[in-house]
Amino acid sequence: MERSISGMERLSPFVRSVKITEFQYLVGEWLDFDHVYTYIEQGEADIILNGVQYEIKAGDVILIPPMKLHFIRATSSEPLIQYIFHFDLFHWDDQSTWADTGVNQDQQIEIKPEEELLSALNPISRIHPALRLELHRRFHLLRQEFIGQRPYSHLFMKSLALELLIYFLRNQRESSEGKGTKTKGWASIEKAIVYIRQQYSDPQLKLERIGDYTGLSTNHLSRLFKEQLGITIHKYVTHVRIEEAKRRLLENRLTITQISDEVGFASIHSFSRTFKTIVGLTASQFIENYLARSRSMQTANSKES
Image 1 (cartoon, rainbow, N blue to C red):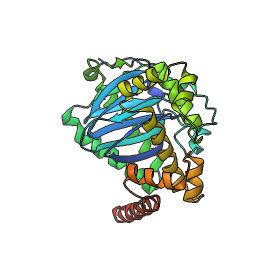
Image 2 (tube, rainbow, N blue to C red; image 1 turned 30 degrees about the vertical axis):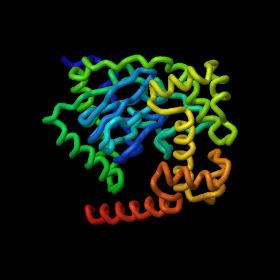
Image 3 (tube, rainbow, N blue to C red; image 1 turned 180 degrees about the vertical axis):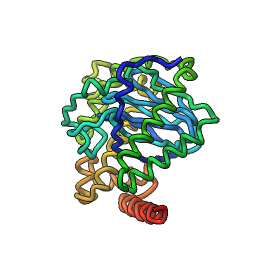
Image 4 (spheres, rainbow, N blue to C red; image 1 turned 135 degrees about the horizontal axis):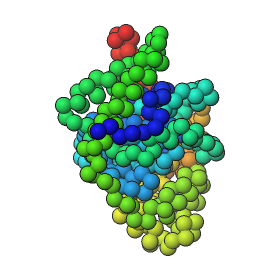
């Protein structure tokens, strides 16, 4: 029986971003002002949303409401492949012009009440195997329209986003058995994460300062991070710095040395060594690899159209 949600008949999704990501190793947190629809094509991961941990695997869809801090950690040996699109439930003239999806440090975002329509739902749905091929097809059509931006693409993307949402909604009953588990000490972990995101650019950011801010001993805080997130605080701080560096490298506004300073490394040598160890490429190779993939994607899209 269909679950009654007042206002569903008025849904008019605005699609902001469509992408496919593949990571051999993924750990990190995100905070987005729009909805994030993620289909797990391959691999397994743990996701913590609002302090509740869920185990997700191939065939699962995660629907993350706006402004909900979520932490994802890949847990399988095979790469984690995710089909992702960002969207608003309704078309807003002001928000339709926003290019970014994540919330920057200084942004003050007020979520419109209508965008909370689906917030009470279980965030995980397991798609029936017989339906996954159709979901794949619709997602790739959505991605093709987003990239191609052909006439009336916005209408086609609206209809495809609604279909993908229906797959999520119709499979809610199957996933209701697999409730998440409350994450021990999440309030302190979240407080530490927010503080690290604010202070990562300071090379003197140490565990003791983070502990003082959260009101926990360094030993207790370290144990919480390791037990609940599967990563040490030191590695998490490094992760934040490298992810910020990657974003800035692709913006192509600053030199690698300037970026190294801005994201909190004591020296360019330390940055270069850490970047190569984590990413598997030098910063210059990372930029070139990104540009090469962009050129390849443009060529493929031109052939498709």
